Image 1 (cartoon, rainbow, N blue to C red):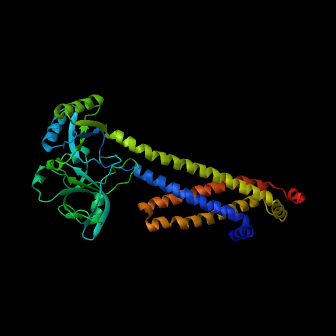
Image 2 (image 1 turned 135 degrees about the vertical axis):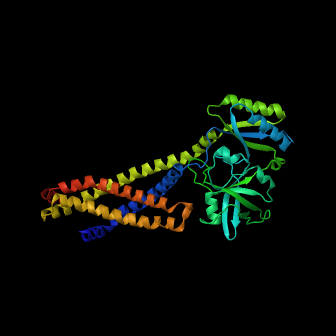
Image 3 (image 1 turned 90 degrees about the vertical axis):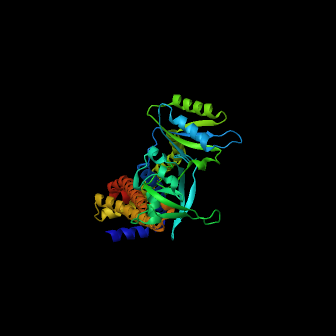
Length: 399
């Protein structure tokens, strides 16, 4: 039966090549759309790795020609921490979670190298404020003031890349890896390892991260400071006003802006949702067009093959048999188109393209294959029924 179907398809190769091409390109486009949607969906369901609820971001800017001197900044932070409703406060770098600003560096240990690692400056309260979950070691504390070299906490994916899955990282050293000149390599000592984090937003993947301990004297050259404040649930504009007035009352010329990290998350979400919605619309539009195209081509083929159908019926073929023949031809053509598309799609996981997990590519291939087969079978069903209903005497009389 299958051999006979291949012969029929080969005999009509000129008309079938267009249908085969449509199936091939439809599979490729559906595979691409499904890969992106699966990848974003997979990231979306993963935990952030930190708790940003009720955390605000304060941007404190010194006056013109001034610096955020350590002693004055300490006074500001002490007064803000004392306000009712403020639970915890931490000093950090400008690249707080969900912002469009990043700070990257390359690190190495021995022959192992890791590029574009997210680097954050963080003080002793940063980890507890965000509830970062420690897997090894500890977070920074006051005893680290006596350390002879810079200290760092790393994420689990950074640990796996630089130290391997089985080697302990706490107490070990790693260094910056500047490929194109710049500063001399700087060594850091690991004091802790935390879970993977997704600070880029709802659809961002976990990224290797390093937190370098920030001490008070590091702020002497700052023209502005970024402060994280955890507040009690239910706090709002009234507390924000008190924070702004507190900073202004202590420093006179310093200015303060207060943002909730939840608002930063929503701002980061909007430009990401737009292309996702566009992809979904493209996918739906493609499915509808493929369905219409398949249905039209099959309908036209049946109208052109009425004489063949009448002759086969006259020779003893049954109506259901004719219907199965047309359905079989479509499924064989679909299989050929899907196989050709799969040969192209399988190159992406083999080459490790776009740093997407192979399982995402596999799920996208399965989804694209399923959609194409459902479309082909669904569109072939009604034309096949029409072919099965053709009476031999009527078909032959028309010829």
